[in-house]
Length: 115
Image (cartoon, rainbow, N blue to C red):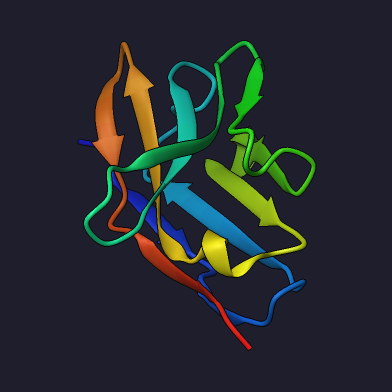
């Protein structure tokens, strides 16, 4: 069983930055695809950014140029650097890893962008 644990959420003013981390209990990012989702109350969970085991990265149009996804395989950790945050980025952010090693979700971390 693989556990994913997010951290780094919080309250930030518009235009500010946050970095989310997703730590795993075993090495999976070089095998599974992984990514960050976000969910606003009463709306569907949205894929924000992802990377394949081969390093192909994709971003939602709404975050291109502002968010950067990365990984540190040695630390079994994935990151989401979020810059120029907007109020509409407010959501619970989840990390997920899926592929031949299974499908795993973190518990979520709240990001609130407000003045």
